[in-house]
Image (tube, rainbow, N blue to C red; front, side, top):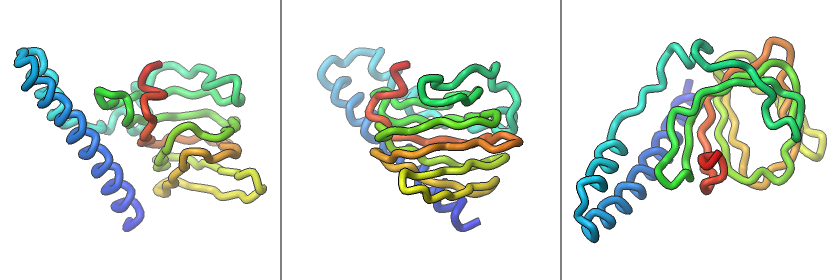
Length: 169
């Protein structure tokens, strides 16, 4: 429970930091242009975003499709709850059927919290760690290895600081 609280606290701090940075930029833009559209953007950024039970339970996530097929054979689906206005920060829920994908020099930092099922992470040195429901992990930028989704699949919350990589898709 303490680990879950720490992960959520960390995600909240990242989220609030991104809102602060985005809000500071919006305030600067607003001071320069004094346009009503800048004020509307700021209002939207200050709204709470609910991570609803329906999607977190795996319902209403869309259809399964190949996920990054150049890196593996995962069949996945998901929902992106939020991207910061600069596309540097994102949060979503993701679900995959059994399979695997290879990461080579991961281009962003990502926190994963397993809601259902499990993930098996194998680093380049051959060390293996399994993360079950209620557990999480942080993949740091530059990590290389294999993510394996065992029989039964996985559903997770992801929180990433991406530097605009994924938000532009």
